[in-house]
Picture 1 (cartoon, rainbow, N blue to C red):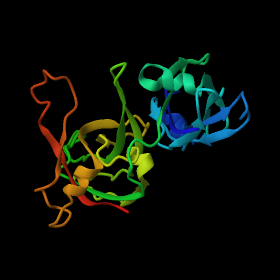
Picture 2: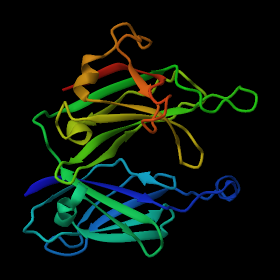
Picture 3: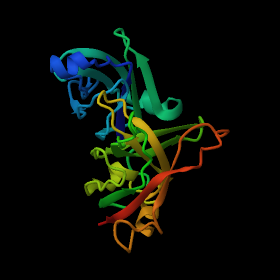
Length: 279
């Protein structure tokens, strides 16, 4: 039996309105539940994601599956609103997902939402343990100054790990951590957090990671400020030694966009690695 990681995302989810959010107090958070619906492990619940809001969601909860090509394991992924309303579902066999180009399957459901399931080997390196990480932002680009110039960005960040299928030439990023958002602050000090190495980087300290910084939006469709690529090993090598405002070893947040954009490589702020260790 081989251990795999299963990641779920969904698109074309119902939008939100000011009326439903503020006056009707209706929650638009959604979650996914994954169940084995055939074969020797039929009716086994693989797990449930966290609840999140947005038109497009990549849930960060890592789900684990143990199987091999000789075992028939159809996975049914159902997406629900938090009130229990079913928004759509898809079914795909676990090994078939892993053997597909890019190691993912996408399906448009009868209700119009699009569900994507991806499967990767869970352990690609030999390191084991838990990572402790702590980030601080400096000079984050202000993307919402407002009419009078008094507004400030509300920054948060996500960490994603690379999913690479070299035979198909497909690169994807799987989100594994999502920070809190700090309102109206261009120098945010986010909470320290811990992650198992298997979930963070497939147990490989040099596995590529993408840090993306977002500006909070109330409808869940947060605006990208910028990003940079790194690894856990690089972050450990560049921990600040002069406090949480040390710019010397900070990582530059770069604007995302087309290569012919003249402003593509303009710095959108810095991320200081206050702490990065594993044990």
